[in-house]
Length: 254
Image (cartoon, rainbow, N blue to C red; front, side, top):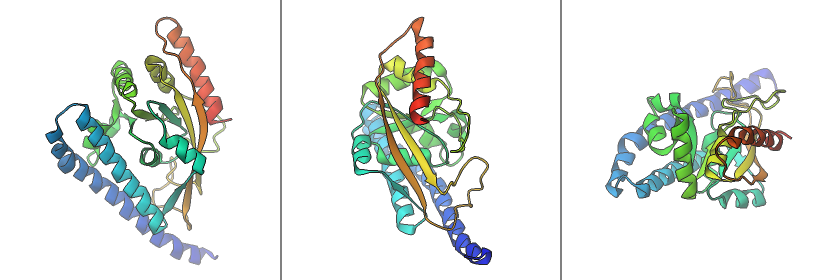
């Protein structure tokens, strides 16, 4: 395929990507401004929280399904890995972070789940209400641990990216933050590791959002297994978090 042919293939795909980004932003507004307030009719307790998470999951599944039908991208995983991920209950789900939509893909596949979001995401015009109502906002370290402990004890899965920010798949050095390990140790919840591989690489750090390649992008999910965790506190908590973070690194990036 010549460069001119590639251009004519990429232009429609870039336009399709623009449509999806626009739909994602508008969808966030509709969720936060219209649908979430309606759910308040269920009350402000855990029943309402579950409903909000379920609504987010439905929307993310719709987003991923529509992308597959239109040929923008697809998510693949083995039958065994899908079954394991669909059966997770009260786990800290850790994954590598290479693209803008990693959290969308994971929350679309996992059962009842939420994710840890940066404080800046809670101030975004389009989806701030969704983040503040259905995610754990990382604006208070102690508050995050306590909120995660409550959710994990209720069987909710929590997605967190130990890298903290998007990192290229071929990065030589992986510096992981200890938040995921601390969360698991504080709650005594297992850590489940998932690796995401994008082929070709898209939506990476520093990569324009319209650069979506000239073919269907494939996101492969690889279940890297579970790390049992014992609930700890006190003086041993810090050293245990360091050790567990290293175990996560070796499991995610063998």
